Length: 111
Image (tube, rainbow, N blue to C red; front, side, top):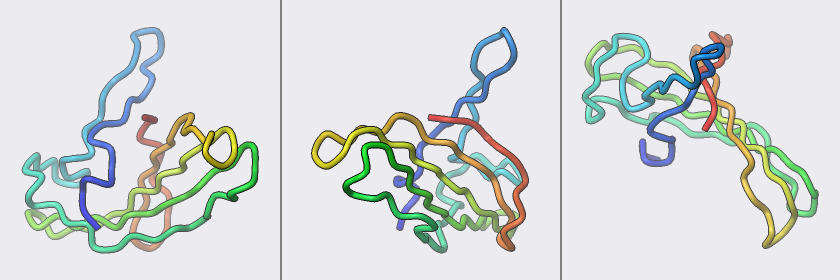
């Protein structure tokens, strides 16, 4: 488990002004942008994608702990796939922020 499994940025739509990048390599609690202070404490697959389905989704949750402020939070990635078997392609991934107790705090963006 490492931070490299998580995308470096997600993009949120900002009305008619385009997309706003949000860095996942900084603490979402204190804003510390030193990625060496972020640790992936736990990773769990909430929902596994079906191998034979033409369209599938997979939900993976990462618990992140910031050594700078001591706070922990969860990033839940929902990967949406099209195709089956060798032709499976990731269409998009939705990234949501959760507390470690499972309370959703909001959608961060897509990548």
